Length: 237
Image 1 (tube, one colour):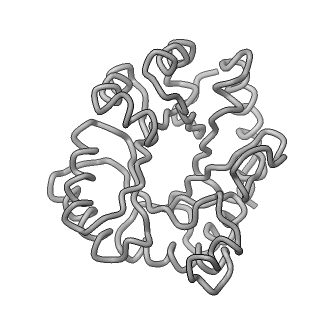
Image 2 (cartoon, helix red, strand yellow; image 1 turned 90 degrees about the horizontal axis):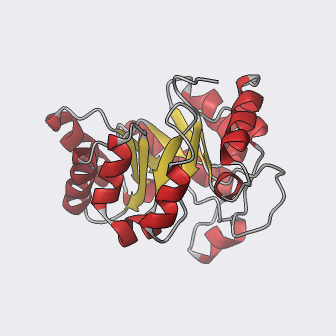
């Protein structure tokens, strides 16, 4: 099954390039995009990202930049120079940080997508309260999504639980990247706000980040095809 714009982003949650590439060699860019996060990037560096791009994969560089505006802008430009499809930063970094990052991409003519992290999917209301956020997850996600859109972001990273609210508010063109996808929606790890692939798509998610349910599957290709077939029948309601 050939998919022109696969909506599955497989998280390469590996600590070395050997194991990551062993998995990559079993799949192809028509079935999924790939996510490189902090662990793999720190271990393998930019050259590994460039290798994935050369193999034809759309790469989501998930480094969640959050620093002073000038530092983040330079980091975002460096990510763009690697040829990645999408990168991200923390919306909680504020308007100046986000606008600066978007401006440097625009000035360089980059087509890299830039999305802002709202509330990590490992967080719940208790976690927000611990860091001094007095309202609930839904309200915090919504406020940071508005700030992100105003700052020129292409979309946000948010759980599938909030996706329905965000899609209704921000329309079809706003990208919603959803981590915390589990095939059976049973909490088995450090994620708090999880959904199945189908429910996330129904709720309005644009792209689904799926890691271990694919990378640890006995047959990753079959798993990807099954999920792709499942979500292809679902639309936002």
